Length: 66
Image 1 (cartoon, rainbow, N blue to C red):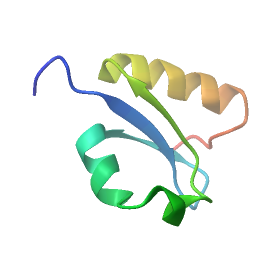
Image 2 (cartoon, helix red, strand yellow):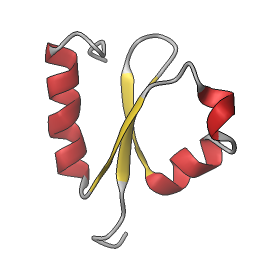
Image 3 (tube, helix red, strand yellow):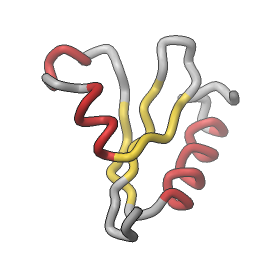
C-alpha cells in the first residue's frame, strides 16, 4: 500500500457509497460505457480524503449512510 494509491467513491445500487482503491475501480469498470448509471467521484490522494468527501456526499443527500 503505497501512499500514491488513488481512491474513488462509487455509488452502489442501494444508494450507499463505497470507497474503493483505483485498482478495484478499474477492474469493476472494464468499460466506462457499461457503468453509465453508476456515479463515482475521485480520484482522491488518500483514503482519509475519500472518507471526508463521502461524509460531504452523505450530507448533500447524494449517498445514503451505511
